Image 1 (cartoon, protein in one colour):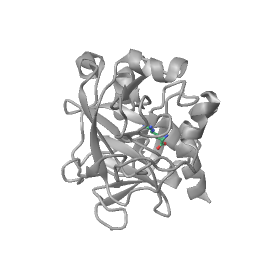
Image 2 (tube, protein in one colour; image 1 turned 45 degrees about the vertical axis):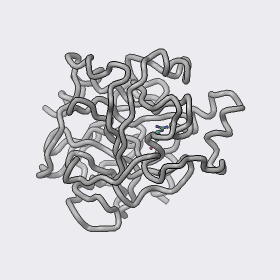
Image 3 (cartoon, helix red, strand yellow; image 1 turned 90 degrees about the vertical axis):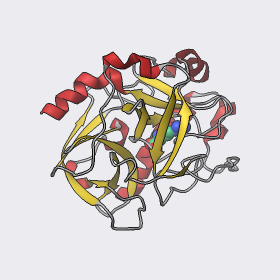
Length: 267
Ligand code: ARG
């Protein structure tokens, strides 16, 4: 039951978007649509190892069900999406580090002692889809620095960025057993505005994807990293369908939240 709730929650972003978009595009997000994607991983990605990307982690229920991603930014702090942790009690969340294959027991499972959710978070299309978890231990995995206000250059349109996650390999499809990765170019703010209108807020969000689609994060990747220039620049948040032409993935713009994240690290 908890797993169903988590699954519903992690898909909520997509459903919300589908609700506010015109009827013609609502069908794009429906779970029964034929899967037109060619790629078989993230959407359009390849397998990756946590030895290469040690700071990528996943969130699981106490029974081990993976439902979101996250990023280790300090030995005991994980950045994820607010829509991944909203309504959760810390005791219900596990952070799994160093495990490429969800069916293995590799790596470390940490418990969560505190969940911080951005105080202005309401829903993904308003923004502030940011959460920081405090772990019950310091993990040995290497952390990654996150973008600050000094890093605006990392957000230039066309910048190649890396997405990572254990989420579904097509919209409405099944989750990946293995960690997957792909690179996608950041879009300009105007491109993202064209796609999403007033749901896109350039202060809170940044978009990434090819104009022709084909490569994207998808359900279950939320909370996970968007990385450029060796820094965490985005948090997987929402999108219309997955990997559809004209609809890039939307990520929380980490630089906007750097001060708040740093405060949580210091706390
Ligand atoms: N909301 C999804 C999740 O919770 C992430 C969706 C990302 N969608 C996209 N088209 N990039 O896992």
